[in-house]
Length: 196
Image (cartoon, rainbow, N blue to C red; front, side, top):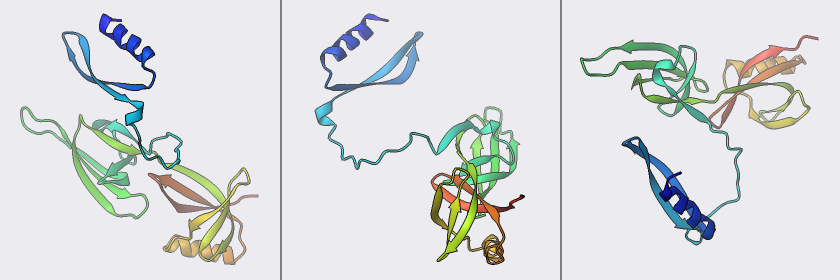
């Protein structure tokens, strides 16, 4: 540890009410250079609403050249499944460009984007979970997971899948629905028959 770092640590121990942030800035002559941000805790009077999140990010960065067809990516702010991906070389000193075409996983809309292959793109954390449909009330489904926890916050979709869900429910069939979740949105995407 260099002398400057030791002095900063000593100063921090004495001034516990001070918030110090070190931000990586650059590397000069094999030494890391950091931007030092110092603020007194009294200066940090932010309005906090008391809401806390789990800390899990809704997206993560991934290099554009490592994306693959049938994978997921954020295109123009929408979580999409990649349906087509082409790479083109540009001029003598240019970067390879990746042309991505994707279908929104919730709405089915088509989006396109072009990105240099060395740049990062956001990839959504997509999860799927199966629920058993117990009943439908005013267009909302009462769903139960494997642990017995119930939820009643998802509407029956307004498409062919929703018509099939209503038909199976009216016929008294027992079945599961698959709920897909990404970037704060949730939707029913499939039906699975329960085998006894």
